[in-house]
Length: 345
Image (cartoon, rainbow, N blue to C red; front, side, top):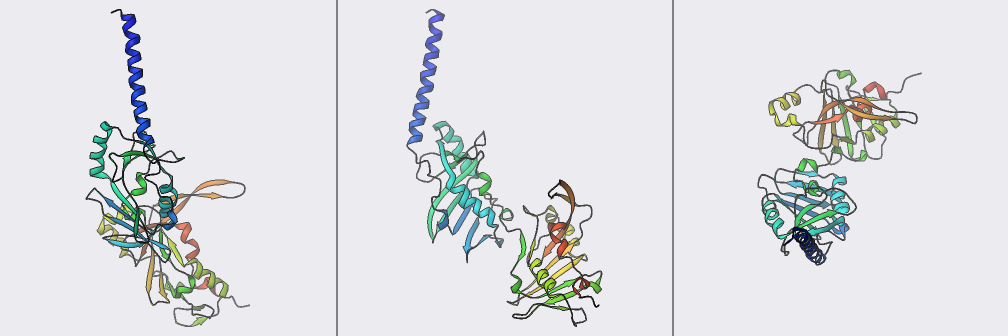
């Protein structure tokens, strides 16, 4: 047969075949509820569980207690980062949409991957399961995520509506990435007494006694009550009612136990010892961190610049780890006894 005739026929066959596959895929996609993997009423969610297929990872559970979110695994139970929880439940889950189901050929490979590395995410409301999905890795273009739902015959590519990205990072089972960055977070009224100690300069030490229905009192290290500025004392208790750390995973130094312990056992710059109204005692210690700096943005009405800020080690008696904190976050808390005294005329 003439080559000039054969070539157009081959092209027509290829086009028709491609259109056939496209039509089949469109029909197949239309059979799926685009919101199959989403949550329609996130306000009702009060518990979430991540169960990884990878046995080297730990099961992670999020639960709400007195309107506060917590995260736990078999190693610990912590207050959760509210913003991260809200992103998962209120932003991500309602926006999940099926882009398309995987083809027969894709399904074979994706099923193997999901079996090994997927995380099963289950969402509960009032003790009842409202959604359960298996979350895998990203598509090649990183604009969708491979997911599977029990009761269906194949995985799907699921996208985040009106967002260019994939969902896998929101199902991470590293508990430290979900923990609150607050090492201390109480109300000033919960502080019964705060002792601020300078181990290397004890003459700077002081205490603030905060009794119910009474103005806070400044106490010298010799136990005498001093004439102090009440407004400054109240403001200082408010400042010291929370201590935050750098967000993210634990600092690498915590994997080097001897090095970590050498810092913990060294003399801190300053310690904040709290006695709470429930009789609980919490201590926050700040340690020097030589040659360790970070950057911050210093903005005002006329100029914006990036400046260096010193990083310190911070340790809570409630946590075995050392964390990093920025000097800018603690500078207003680093006060001495004399800073509160009312000068005599």
